Length: 91
Image 1 (cartoon, rainbow, N blue to C red):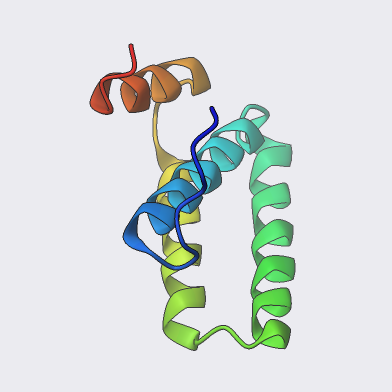
Image 2: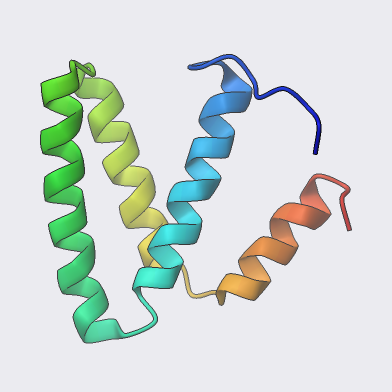
C-alpha cells in the first residue's frame, strides 16, 4: 500500500475513480426504494459541484453514465469487489 497514487486524470486514476463510483453506487442500491432517490440526489449534487469546479461536460456525463450503469448492476458489493480483485490478480 506504499504505492504512489497515479497521476490525476491518467487512465489508471480514472479506472480507480470508476471503481470507487461503482462501489458507492452498489452500496446505495442496497435499499432499492431509498437507493433510487439517493442516487438521483447524489448525481444532481455531484454534477452541480463538477460544473462549479469547471469539469468539461463530457467528463460529467461520462461519470454520470458510469454511476447509473453501476447502480443497475445485479451484483452484490462483495461479488463486485471480488471481481475487481481477481481481474487485477490480487486474489
